[in-house]
Image (cartoon, one colour):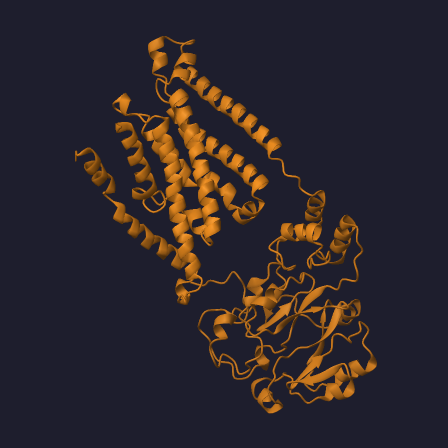
Length: 234
Length: 303
């Protein structure tokens, strides 16, 4: 029960309370660039969600098995060359960034091939933004968040397992989708509005983004409230 | 310890590369998309300027439209006839006559010819200056702030002594200048010869009002229309019927050019060999000093 509740809290937190776009301000470029129409925004959001889930899965697996200090694969290999207590301390966390970017780039490539084959109109409307998911900081941010909950955790039992990591990836992507779809809906309405000339285009988009972020601040404290309500403990 | 770490790092990256490239290779085969070879060939044949002159977003989209939607093969203005022929060969069709499109600036007044011009200190662009009255007396003519110069991707349009002047050697006819001109004095015309006769004035006012604001503008006297039926008077402005225009001008057309008191009927386009021969004996200064009051260039300091 505790585990399910933990997953639930992580999901709510990633999707709403600490929304990647509107709380951390990562992944702004597709948020601004592909939020003209709702259907395109839904496509972009699902692509980001998919890539984020795959990237988090790959990065969690590699971090736990290879990169973190005392990871099974690396210490097993190192055991052939050095005494066991040294081998257990071998630390490859310097590789995290490059490995994550590697994983993200490959999964984006996979998504691109898939979309190109099965959804050509979506592929066309994405244009340059699909390859740009590669450099979407929201995805690297999700991977690094997962890493920060695995590497350097005081109590080993607190370290995130794959389920928690995937919950963050999927619901973080879902939060991105929510944000970009809301934005696209607003921008579709904005096209019909008489906006003063100095605010036209990017300016009003950024202002709307800021107001949205303020609105999402209203979710602050929902997690502790939920925890108090469901467990009876503050 | 260090060497083991380095070796392990390298091994990690290498094995990741192996696994991921195997997966991607498999996906590439599995999700292979059959691209029409003709599209690739047409993209190779097109200039790749992505100027949008054909009406499509880029060369790739135009190539797709040609190959799949039976779009005309001669729409690429930049590539011209040779490009149209190559594309036609790829598509297995024949192409008719393609005329190059070139802009004509329908204004001939330099700073000295313009009357009622006042100092303007606003935003240095025609679009802004066009909103203000009394920048110059003529409300039809070139303002000379160089919106067209900045719109041109091919460095083919420059403001010379306050008048937008096309460099026909560099111009490819994409039409960006005509789109950006707030007074619509640049028209994109099909050039039937290297040099085209043009009315270099846009003023539709009556003669008296024109003489009040310009030393060279068309006063609508109608002398050209009387000399040749190629010309007609529309809204007090001499207008050439380009449908009936022949690449070799007849004598009455040349006579009409001579009768024009304001000398507004001029030939534009690339100078012919004869012109260069004529100009050889004329005096030209060896070094032309740029005048910062009148020269508009992209390098100017805007604060």
